[in-house]
Image 1 (cartoon, rainbow, N blue to C red):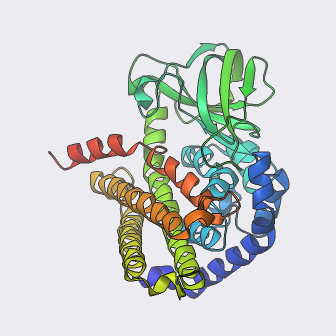
Image 2: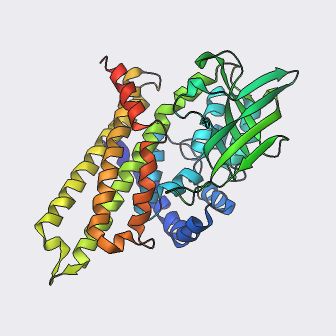
Image 3: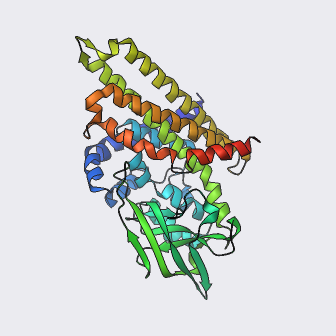
Length: 384
């Protein structure tokens, strides 16, 4: 393992996030799951603890660091008893803000980036539409220029943090068909014609609110345009590598937590006068869980290091991220299932932690590019 992941600063970050999770998250997570959302106060607390803005530059209000630091935050939260649903909701700005930071628009940074990283506001990203998911170039929500405003009509669905969000970085069609006609607009909650429905009921990620959005003649100021008009597709694509790597980290971190829970239960639970861990079949399951988890972690960390050493537009970096996500997703889906099996009836109870990980893991092969879509992309990048 590269020593990039174990510097004194990163060890301190891991310990800090672990303490925060044990103190501020774990005691309340079951309640937030039942309520279907996180309290806004948690964002403020995470910002105060120096966690919310990790991997965002200090000059835009972040806490500094890079993708490795972000991965360490994810690992520590899950390992301490948090969940990927909580991460998706608390850190939705990880997909809502990078486009604004990359566009380097000082006005947008001051109005949206800084207050969000400060825990004062919540942002989300609106790309997926009712008629399509991974086909970003085919989106139909349209924005027509009218003087100093864009008039937006259309709908978005499966929007993470969409219920609580104060603004949505929204992909809209400002030009012709295909990827060349897409722009990004920041649409603020409360704008006339902007309606939010939800939270949607889901299999997992219960503490992460998910919404449907509709836009009917919504007038959005031109100054809310992120980057160049018709240049939004490039901004979206540039962030896909980091999003996929982030989901891969969530996957192997969850697999590790599921393995640890299973190993602990196997040592404590006795059947026919012996602990489960005394059974060869259980020990072999644990070994295979370890192997798959470790392989996913190594592949993903290598991809992260490649992305930091190169460019997110480099085909080889894109390929590494795609392979990492698919590898980690395959691992976590198998590991959480085996962990539930080892827990037996106890693992099927809603009160068990592994129940949450089992449900939450299922979305990881869908969000950020479905496994099948990414496999097809990999085949093109490999020249097959």
